[in-house]
Length: 278
Image 1 (cartoon, helix red, strand yellow):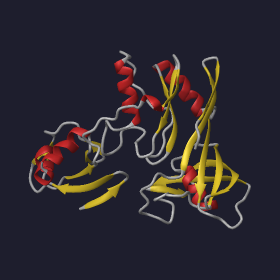
Image 2 (image 1 turned 45 degrees about the vertical axis):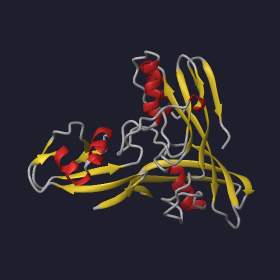
Image 3 (image 1 turned 60 degrees about the vertical axis):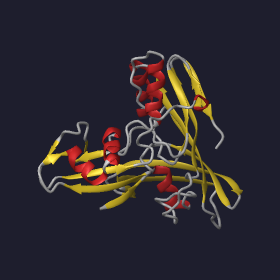
Image 4 (image 1 turned 180 degrees about the vertical axis):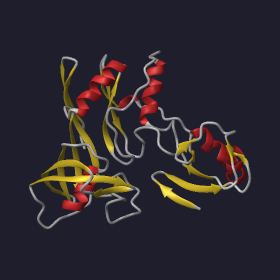
């Protein structure tokens, strides 16, 4: 059995006998199974399998994520470094690259690229992204340079003192509103949805005009729920172009027309303002 997951194909294999994870995966996938194991793409009961010799019992079912980039570690392009100083690093993440380890692979992602950059400089700190972006979303990601800096930036984020601004192109509308402030409660189960028991969510959409048959909006993200902007656009305005999850085209393969284009905050005695063109 197989299914599509983001940039990977998901397959399920049930053990018909007691055996190792390696035996079962390679029985079905040959060398491709070894690649998936090394990349961290094999899961059992919601846990990534780190040891190929892990024993399975008859009836156990593995989830295996296969991706064309599994054998390739991500190399950070120096041109994607927007800014760095002794405290932090800002990266312009490309579309179609994961922000951090995903279900298919632990090494083809921006966080791994930053980690390798730090190791090349003999830094012992293991980076954690302060903000994350969806796979097909381009834009600014923030990383610390040390654990104390990480804690300081996370405190700012939790206090909503790291201000985030996005640009999006939406499907055409007859009368696009100039401003739309959206407040609701969201939960996430496979995709975002309204839920009275969910977390409070708030976005401000500011109309920029129509260009190339699309409505251009700037978005101030006032809370940071998963898929918040994508859901708010599709539910209250119009879907973002190329949004394969919330838009009309479920087969869209082009990057979603959403860019994390600005970060603003005060930290370490400085005022930080970062901008990229959408």
